[in-house]
Structures are given as C-alpha cells and as structure tokens.
Image (cartoon, rainbow, N blue to C red):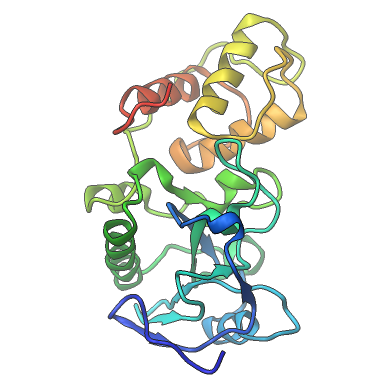
Length: 254
C-alpha cells in the first residue's frame, strides 16, 4: 500500500504494510483504545509501520495531539491480538484500533496530556458518528484481553471522554471496607457476578467458582471502571459499579 486518503480529516497518512481484509465481511462497530507502551512516539510509529513487527493500528495519537492514520478503516489492522468481546474472538475484524502514545507501565506510565486527550476525543467522536459505534463499544485493550494486556491503563481519563460524548461511563461506587468475593469462593453469588460480567461483554465462564480467570477479568473491569483499587476482588464497590453500568446501558442487552 503506497498511500490512501485519510478517513479522519485531521489525520496525516503514513501507511503500514501490516493489515488485511476484515473476515466474513464484518464491518467495524467497536473502538479499541491502546497505549503504545514504548519509549517514544517516534519509536512506536516506526514499529507500527515496520513489516517485521507484524502489528499495526488504524490510528496513532501523539502526545502533542498529532494524529497519524496507518491503515484504512475499511481494512483489518493487526492491533488487538488474541481476545474477545461479547462472544466474538476476532477482535481485529469488528474494531478500529487507536494507539495512544504513552510509555506505559514498563517505561514510566504517566498522565495523558490534555492536548492528546482532546485529539483522541475528536477522533473517536468522528469514528463513532460515521460507523454508528455505540458508547459501550468504546473499549480498552485490557477489556478484550484481560491479563494479557493492561492498556490504556488506570490513568486513562474515561470520564473526560464520556463527558465529551465518547464511551460508556458511570461514577464508580465509593470503596467501603467489607466482605468481597475473591479467589476460592464458590456459589450463586460468584455465578451471578460472572453472568453480569459476561453480559456486559467480558470473556468469563459462568462456573460459580471464583478462579484465577475470574480474578483477572474483575481486575480488568476495575482498571476501566473502578480504578481506585485494582485487586481482582469483587467488593461491594465493584459489584455495584457493574450493576449501575449495566442498568445505564444506552441499548440494553441484558
């Protein structure tokens, strides 16, 4: 691919060779937000455009707000890898990927600059409008790949995005000390939690056993929706935040 016209008018094009066709004629109806997790934005851009890497993203948003498009939205970028959401495992075929420059947890995780966040909001709003992406389909990479990925991380300002019309968000229930469901617990309360997580979209089996996978999924939920404490234990704050989130779905599926 030598070049293409940007889908978002505010982007400059730098083509990546790492893409393919969306499988089964699937059209994008979700956004997956990542952080780059590299030492610099320039290094990330080079890597996403390097055929050796076999990774890419539709967009890259630099810390100064510059937006680079590397893969046309109609194509399947290689950004999400193994994962699932609402029972679908080919995340790349149903989503548009946005990499947001940030060194991540490995290189000194830091706050996302305001100008960068403004760029992300403008880009997301445009994509959501053109592809009719529902608010609850604006996701973290960690939502679709719990445990394997933690980006864009607990510092990402999901509330700011929601205040500007991007994504699904409710105020987290305050943390209060008390009993929590955790690894080793069994029974209907655990099964009910698993059902609610799965109903929202997370990849978790309903077994009634609070196993390591359930703990990982709960931690991923907390990272996005209740980041004040990310421990994988389903305390009352976590459970109530999940219930409020489901009750406030713009288009209820459960």
